[in-house]
Length: 121
Image (cartoon, rainbow, N blue to C red):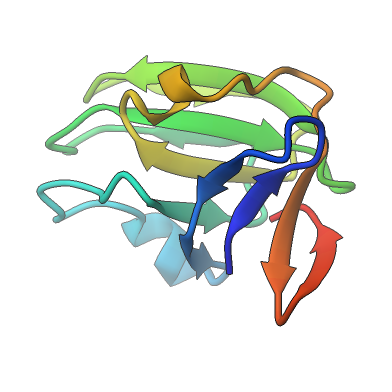
C-alpha cells in the first residue's frame, strides 16, 4: 500500500508498515540498521517522535487526522526529538528520501489500498 502525495502525485513510499498499538509505536524503528528507501513506518496516533538509540537518520512527515501534512522534518539524526502539535500521525522514512520529493505543509497524503485512495496514512 503506497503513500501518495495528492498534490504532486509522487509516491513517497511503496512498502508501508503501520504501528497502531502502544507496543508497536514504542518499538518503532529501534533495533533496525536501516530503513529501505521505498519503505515507511506510520505511527498512529502520534504527534512527537524521538530517535534515541537509533542507528540512522530519518525523514519525518507529520499529518493531521484528515491526512494533510502539518510538518516536514528532513534528516533527523539519532538522539533528536521532533514535535508537531495538532498532528495525528507520524510517517518515518529513510533519511534523505524527502530530498527527492517536494512535500510541503498542507499537502494531502493518500494511502492506496486495493486501488482505492483513502485519507492519509
